[in-house]
Image (cartoon, rainbow, N blue to C red):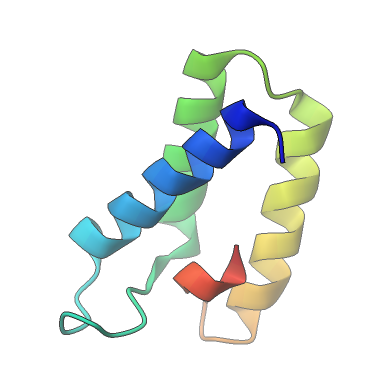
Length: 77
């Protein structure tokens, strides 16, 4: 992964840990809608991640989240 994407994913991991309702040390799940909103926002600020990359990443995450009642787990990315 290039540095920009690695940094963005690190930010997303922190966001999941902050926003989750899971107990500390748990899966740090957040709703896909929340994850998607934050990811799109941070990716747009960054400006180095293409729309194609962003859409492909979110599509992959949504497929995984759909198997977990619409929740994104940190291990999904």
